[in-house]
Image (cartoon, rainbow, N blue to C red):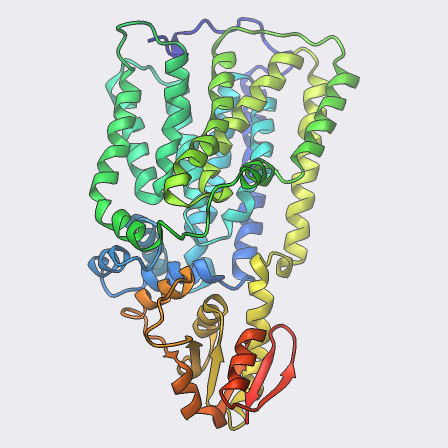
Length: 502
């Protein structure tokens, strides 16, 4: 099987970017950019509350023992593999229980992914186009997941490492082969869908397959690397699948598939259009080098777009199709874009510099805008709703209200986590014998064994009506309560409808 390192390298050199001093200066630039993202991401991590998925992360990671974490996950309290919670647990053991400590693994993974992708592209092209690959990541969805306590930034980092090993190491040597398999092992141990990261490598080899030719050692090692953790984690995977596989929230549709690619690169079409304008204006007579290691790496990188396509197929069984699940595609695409620009305009360094400047300006402006307004990063409105509840809680505590009943599981989980009076927070259920179909509510039922919560039915509500406040009752719920004989007084409509029982 022909490998990337066996391809003939392009002998022509880009103008003005060779030499030790030049390469060193690009490394300095890459480190400065990464330091900027590191500092601003830590700031954002410290100024944002956890949303419900992150609350699950820290609650599970703080369970008494790692065996308790395994047991809880095997009872479907959350959807991620155990290793990620152990990483967060270790981070909080070093830096204390806080938003920054829980998000620090993601922060460091994001920064590492940027540098690894830069170096991978730099070795294939030059320092300037290495920076181009770095800024492609900076203009993607990656910066957001750098300040979220979920495993997606770690998936990007491991994907970048696997790409680097595949492209820049000898396929016949034992150590790179073992390392490639180990990276795949770690990836699947951090997120189950990381298994799809093997798809572009398999497609690349498959497109060059010759009859009776065995797969490369790296591909075999990668296959073993994904199978071993999948087998080890099978009890956890099967438990979650049995409970949620038929009604999980991510059913694949062609609309969501299309949205996945736009989510990868917000404003990506605009940036691509401006890039084409830069090439047309500054390098009208572009050159094309269609052979060599860079061209082969570019083909492999574009194949990373097959990851969400493969996920689309898999999700018809798992019902778990969310753009963030396929974020491991980003490093390959970033390197492919960098190699593509280098092939076309490498003799016109001004065009490449203009494209790098364009992406850098866009990336820095977006990041600084978020730093200026961290409250603007508000997934599903949870940040603002939780903060407004906490301000409301002060007033409620001074009144005769002793119970605060929520009608939505996700705001309840977030409010209970941050509340100074968590024992007052209650989640309402329609009836004790009714099947719990809502995914979030079922997760909280599973979590209740490890993180005690309160659930009420209509009978419980009747017994404590006088000292109870309702948060977010739906119109149908209010109607049902009125029919049951309750007198309702609605006092606030934002951020939730707030009602008192009389």
